[in-house]
Figure 1 (cartoon, rainbow, N blue to C red):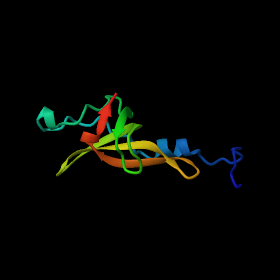
Figure 2: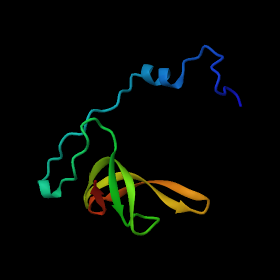
Figure 3: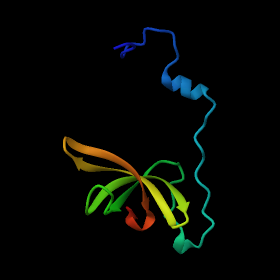
Figure 4: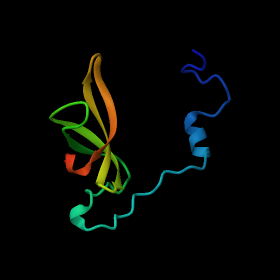
Length: 107
């Protein structure tokens, strides 16, 4: 495989190219301007994901553990972007989906 694990060239690494791109991660999201009973649970201040329970997600039944990545507000209410695993024919399959806030429970 070209490139492989050895760095034999003088080209910058992917990490160095990302750092030099000038693109920086956004800061923590601002507080939503909605009544508190309609607002999603607070995101972490450091911008990292947060563990949650996903109730009856698409692709499986029951409740599965997930990683809440971000929130968005849609006309129908708040949704969380969540990553979770479901059983597949050859082992677990990672799913990333927008799930209604009512189906998410933070731990």
